[in-house]
Amino acid sequence: MITNIEEFFINGCGRCDRFATPDCSIKQWDSGLKKLRQICQNLALVETVKWGHPCYLHGGRNIVLIGAFRHDFRLSFFNAALLTDPQKVLEKQGPNTRHPDMIRFTANDQVAAMEAVIISYIQEAMGYAEAGIKPPKEPDTLEYPDELIDALDADPELAEAFHVLTPGRQKSYVININSAKKAETRIARIAKFRDKIFTGKGATER
Image (cartoon, rainbow, N blue to C red):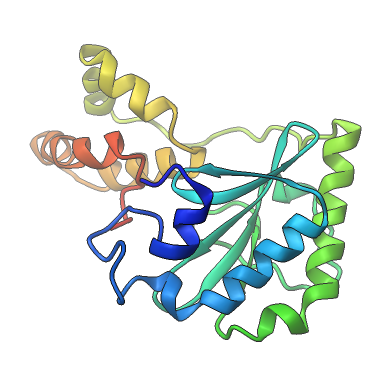
């Protein structure tokens, strides 16, 4: 994964074999991604790289993350449960996401057209960060499979890599492994996922 912010906007995130090729998703969404970056910079957010993507902070807290995919690009909000979403533009990242947490774009010019809305949503999130307000913790109903618990207990390096994943990525592994009915299948999936976990990816990421 990339660690330099400029490299993302030139070559991509470094998570797949399309990195630094004409087929990388950032090429298709170049102007839209750069417009999102400009908006974040104009709001004086602190710019850094996390999980191979541009991440913007305020008050010491993550505010938004920029990502590019084949069919869309996204501005994802941290602590999205706090957002009031008056324009109803937020969507869920996937079926297992608890709260709508992203604005999805399917055309580069959508960012400029939505600039005022984007700014207002980011400013709302910045206000919560300044006030130290966090969403209430929700009970995690996911049950870790015994095979995953055993694997993490037996392999400290794997455990460390797993626990630094975002909660959503951890959840993706738990759901995927739990969906296997047989213990041997669950064990095989854990072995298959090992390299992905070490590279910071979720179960369904390429």
